[in-house]
Image 1 (cartoon, rainbow, N blue to C red):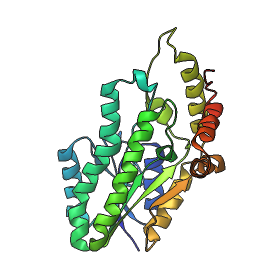
Image 2 (image 1 turned 180 degrees about the vertical axis):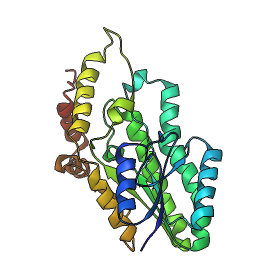
Image 3 (image 1 turned 30 degrees about the vertical axis):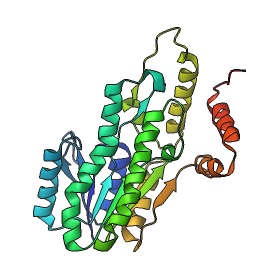
Length: 270
């Protein structure tokens, strides 16, 4: 069944792949971003800034005017950040929270009146496996995605009387351009965090460069569009990434902390 889908953050990476795949399957897909360049894409495009309620409202109104309904919102727009918690720029943290949490919330609030009126709809929020773990030097990113997860949990219950469903998709490392766009702390020589941060940052980039092909997420989203009932979370990553979430539940906290430190080569004093 052909569905009307809005995908935020569709200018590149994961969002572009999801929008491209769903359009190829015959769905009416609107990919949005602040700027989509001007190049031809295999899906419809809309200028939309998730930081602007007015921009979101205009884009949603345009879709409704053209199609008469919105069946699926894929909240994919996101911003990465890396750095020691002690040195993070508060302004940068505010940008990350505004994009990853409030941006998704603004889009949800804009589409829900139409979804409630039609008695159906799906909200799919792209989170991260990192939402389940306080990743070293990515604390604010983990926190923003954890907030998105909890927001989605609340939505699932609140929307049940209206026939609207919500879920999160938690990717692990994915081969996208997030490394180039990520905010990061620039530490001066002699900073006490510099050595371990640089080591960890290199591992972060390796995880992305060696991550999953973003095309697999198009296939997953296709399945979610067809699913009669959405589960709370869909986790898609390499076996070790997914296993680390299970280990956090099973291992004593000290053992788990040690495992994370060893993976990122962060020594413990004493």
